[in-house]
Length: 141
Image 1: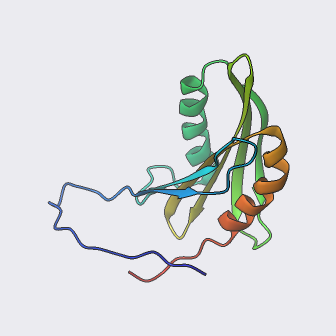
Image 2: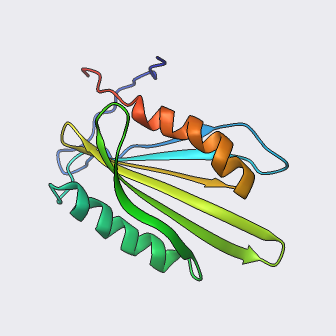
């Protein structure tokens, strides 16, 4: 397991850490893979379905012309409950993107994992990404 360095900032009390991480994965046939992990440390939605639904609506509105292929709850191998959204998006004539987003709430923190795939890499690197998501653990800060 790889942990990530911590640092400190003196934030005023009305500021809130809403961390976003970017992880660069392998490039496959010219398609780079960038996994974005967004944390919502104090989600206003306490149940997973509400948490996911609010963010799905925003994502669909922002990705004009996206076709929803999958929008369903799932249980990860570790037993964590999650919600998965997969969309097909064609931003140009010769470019088809499969956008996968996985939402989960773990120990009171909301997580949104998002990554774009080609049709081929969705079936290959997609498995790695799901294993990465499933490996989520909380560390004492």
